[in-house]
Image (cartoon, rainbow, N blue to C red; front, side, top):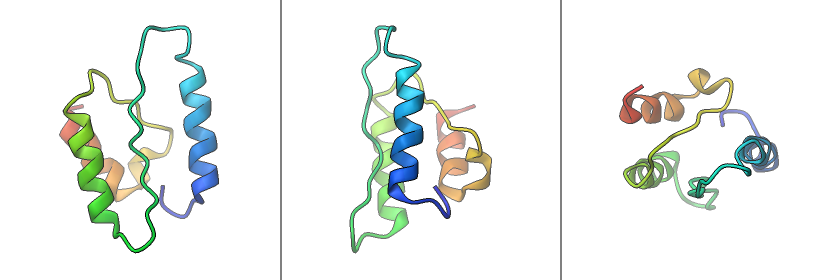
Amino acid sequence: MKNRTAEEIMRERDEIMAKWTNKSVEFIDSFFCEPGKNSTDSLGKSISLMSDADLVVFAPGWENARGCKVEHQVAGY
């Protein structure tokens, strides 16, 4: 999410979700854009939500963002 607007992130997320709409999946909203909150707080919330997921999907370029690298490690990929 580094150097990207919330709108850009949501657009890409929607495109990824559209690829899964014909599958029997439930999406967990893990994008947090809360004014006054730091990125570590959002990362902690995202990781917590991952504990309920059977699958975690990473968008292209995830390897360039510190938080995504952490999530990737936690997911066990």
